[in-house]
Image (cartoon, rainbow, N blue to C red; front, top):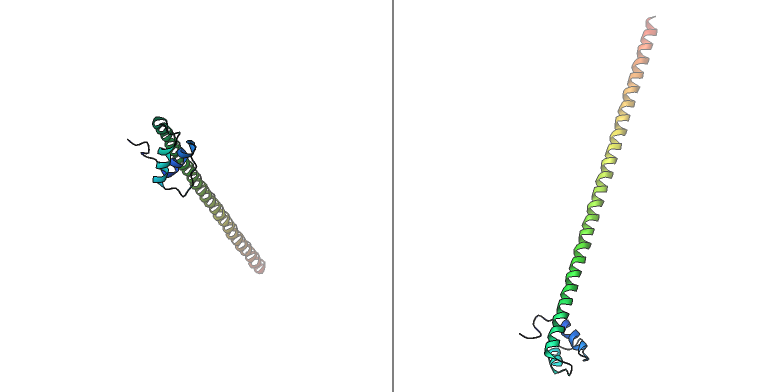
Length: 129
């Protein structure tokens, strides 16, 4: 099994730099492999261990980034749900206030009618006297 199994370009670049080689982004995957294999510091066993460590660290960083994104998305969804809940509460309260105002208005109308009825009866009573 090759020491490069499962390695990405970024992993090979890190290993080459760890071996003291100068690399840049223009190097292709095959160039990085050649640089690593030709390195004076290359000891196949330790290079293989380094490569495994580099790959595992990258995978761990990627997993951590995915977890962070999932947590951020969950938080965002919770914030949206909370805003919706608050909006629903506000709408319900507004509706309740409107219903109270309408009830008061209807009660005022009924009271006016009752007062008018009383006044009318008083007038009728006075006229009968």
